[in-house]
Image (cartoon, rainbow, N blue to C red; front, top):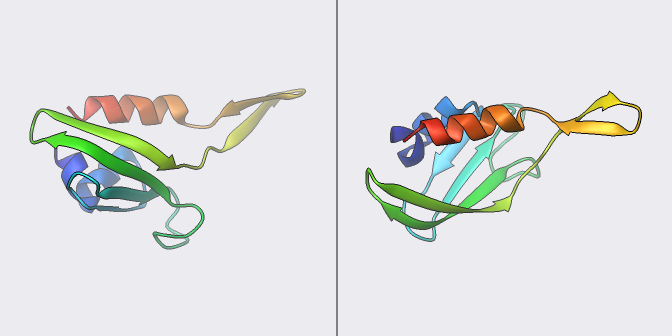
Length: 92
């Protein structure tokens, strides 16, 4: 559960930078690349809607960045989305 409670713990999900304001209404901010700062245009922001320690967290994705990889003529695939979703569900 630590991956949801601290910026250092959230980095276990595979992000380079993170901070967590663990309260209802708080933000979980993260960045996949260390080549910038939290708050810039590549920062992912998730708003905490509800939180019950060791039981549940509900978040709303407010801002995200999805990188697309070309897989064929006129076809793309989101890079690392499956990996990210697996890591999110494995924290509990």
